[in-house]
Image 1 (spheres, one colour):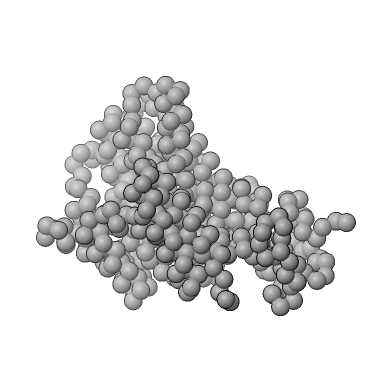
Image 2 (tube, rainbow over the protein chains, first blue to last red):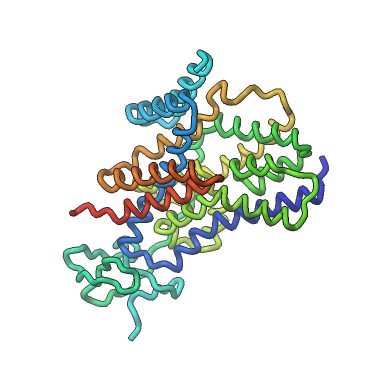
Length: 101
Length: 287
């Protein structure tokens, strides 16, 4: 249970960087008036962030990743349950990987 | 002449939009549409000066926190596995238990922590620290966009509540809270409660992973790497409304995939998301 000062400094730098990221966007939007156009862009932002996180992962991932995401899509669409979406994706990917895909 | 658009709260120029935010409703039919020379966008100008009424601030209640915490439960196995993977990996880099826990507790950003761990070193020069800070910021640049997207919801909450809440922002509680808000929820406690559960789980699982050390099975073999993406898929689906999403999501996917092949690092998230949001935001439904 010891803390190396150099490691602590590095951790604090990372903490400052993430704290800045977490506050900066909300703060900056204070300076930009929310016109209907800006509002529409902001409304589209959550979906766009999620797609931008998911799409490259799916393209660069293996076949099991793609199949798992497909299973999550179907489960979320038909059951509307987050839990089932997660379970379906894990089971599909784990199964395919166990089979050697 | 005093402008009716100066908000009482901040003194900042605030558009009287959306209608709910100042308690007054005026639709497109009653608005004179002017081309704003400043922002180059259509701006609905009210025919009469508006009496400014301060909206009730967004609440942050214990009830909301419990609600948010409850809805984070499906993610627990995935978050715990990810935290344990970080804890175990940190052993390899010579982290003590306390250092690993401090890292997870203070930084609280799984992807950035994992990436930084790859290049972790014994000695940190000021230049290396600066590079580490910049690396952390670029890897987690999406948090800037995520924070921006919360402005229309949380703007009326006092800053001393908002900014500490924002420090709890992680991908999963942000995504869940945006869905909650879109479905009519208004309690910022949802975001905070979900964030707190995520934070506790992240720190505890880091400690557990560190304690177990190298004995953790390959997370890919049991599909752990699918947990967070699958949750994102579940969060994404209710956002679908039609044309605007088709354009915005299509552009976000195409741009992020293209950038991921061209640029090293994590720029694809921010660039793809911005391109998609602007493409969607500038897609008009009525035409």
